[in-house]
Image (tube, rainbow, N blue to C red; front, side):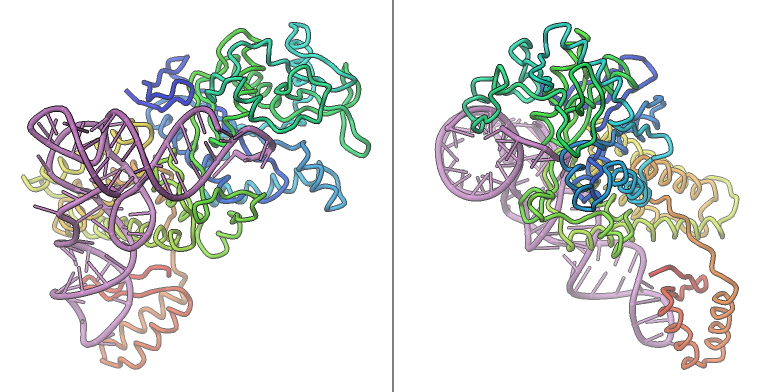
Length: 466
RNA sequence: GGCGGCAUAGCCAAGUGGUAAGGCAGAGGACUGCAAAUCCUUUAUUCCCCAGUUCGAAUCUGGGUGCCGCCUCCA
């Protein structure tokens, strides 16, 4: 039985979806006013991996990552660029998809609703809250009245007294309670606005998630996920809105990922200590970033630095090399009867598979799971050879692919070399045969300059990209 | 001030009562015309400190120390 740590109960719980074969997941996505940074990438990668694992287990996953495309930051960015909020949103959503592709997120099956495409549903939602007495309108601003919701604070484990005593001085005296939050914001000159029963305005931040979760996934969803910094107030407010409206639990499991730090401080736009995913992609393949994110447990804070990315790159290279070694064996091994050694190997590989899956069952411990990928590589390097029966090599190869696929890693295909380069390699082989090492080394250097590294092995020349 | 989390080798990091996974870097070796790459082997008597519980603790309890997150926009 799969266990997930549920922030709501602060316990690891057996995961049971509402419908037997289906899982609904809502992940808080980015506000599209800029490129995403490495911190933003963590939940995207982690929960994409959870989604892949569910699918591996045979669930049909309804997976949603929203785009917040209207709020103060969007408006500021549009003003700064002297353009419209819509144009800013369109542009950075496009940029998002480019980064997502690099990070190997399963985008084609992901639902990405936008706040501004759900305005009428948002208005409808707020109207119902107002009718039920949970919301009140003050001169075009509509607030959620938290004193009407007795469970307020149950997710973030805060009580109202503590919140009020810790709260900053409230300048807004319209509110009945200082902790009330905005559902609908009255229009300000020059800002985008929509017509509503309370006059022109725009939605507050928290309401969009409640509305889109309900519209696309249902009144009660299985999993709601996001960064732990969103736990309060964002997720707390979502719970309040949704449960007051429907009278049902909003989400059965709340999953929160830890922060990505830079020198022990949370990476964030406001601290200006952030690295954009796009920036990282200029130096590294983004699969390296995915590897880095999955190499630590998702709930722990983790430090980001160029050094650890280099470590990740080298680790990922080892995995790809190991995979390539098995592929090379596949080319030369023969169909043979299985002997006792073969059976031993198959047994060992299955043990690694089971351990990998056990780790995934335990609150998606990807770091631990990943270690078994390395175990398989070392094991196959030591125990497989061109004398191994094809079936054994295939079994190892398939298991490696099956497991790395769950993590969304090792899916890059080796490209084919073009004729010209193949010709050069052939020419170098001739030169080596004739002991013309000067020419041979020159060709090797030329190819290296083109990013193709040659290695001479007993089985002939192999190559890889640098 | 309130609430919560973390502390494991040079670096990253898993491990919630049974005697320290895995990766990077380093060292040794194999392979090679030489290299590079690759592969193999190897690296913590010990898990921030002090007490306690226990046959047994990195893991549980109490007390320290240090660091971080949330309480304001934030993944």
